[in-house]
Length: 359
Image (tube, rainbow, N blue to C red; front, side, top):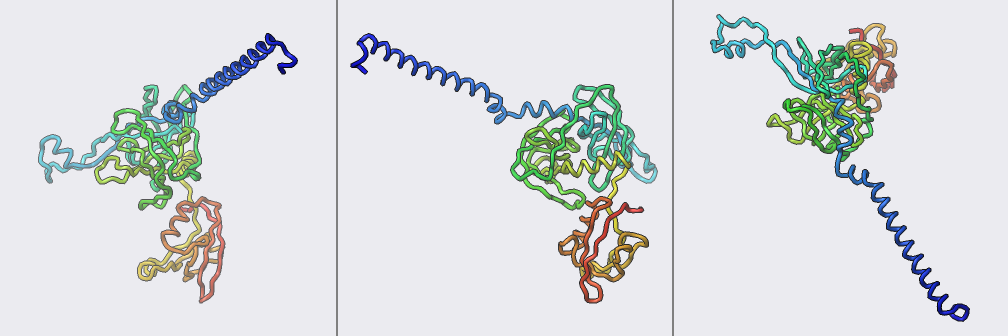
């Protein structure tokens, strides 16, 4: 090139090339700064869940319930009187309980635990995130799952949580528990899903287990995922001290949604039934599921189940009383149930469609 360009032209060319390189460097630096700014929110979200909490917390309410109790010893001791046959009037008194709830729909339907409001409540007050207090009406309760649906009236549209799919949560997923522990006010705790499918002596619910702190007052509150979707209703803890020890249990959101839908539509939970009884003596002595009664015109009657049939399989699984009970308490009317039975030394497979229990 030096043969065709003069000295001055070569200097100009060199300066031009250096300028181009410097310009490209500046553009690259600006691009990096732009990408850093663009990803700023993503970086923040890795270390903070403030945006998720800000969006979700207004959908969790405080619940104060006054319920009737009968405990004469407490009643008279509080007055400094001895408790004996003279003063034992069994007169009921009011006890206030505290818990949390989740707004399930913008028109004022809420879900909480039955043990938060009690079976014989006299007044239920719901405190919203904006400080408003509303008296609530009980729409329905389900003793099996310990859930209750409440309704409040509001002139404003209420914030509600997006319902997540609790069937796809995995052990190790990050979760947040929102509630009102010990009445200190709305609080959030962070943890992970420790296990799924926990029963803890309740076949009605496959609990989600979490190590997010859950304490007295959290019952009925929300367990949400890292995107703010409701995946469970916080219900109870396993603890030797009465406080959080890292084992909290929540009713899965899809179970809660099914219970909510039934209670709003029918005022009760409708579970599957096919209409037969098990012989208690055979079960107790030998652990065998022997049919001893068929309800007339029931699915069992129509499906050819007979007295003295021995149930060997339930929906392809080895039969046990626990398994039988679980299948029915978790089933819905219209669901298919397959039983493998032994009759007169022969194995048969029978199919049934559950219906609403007549009781």
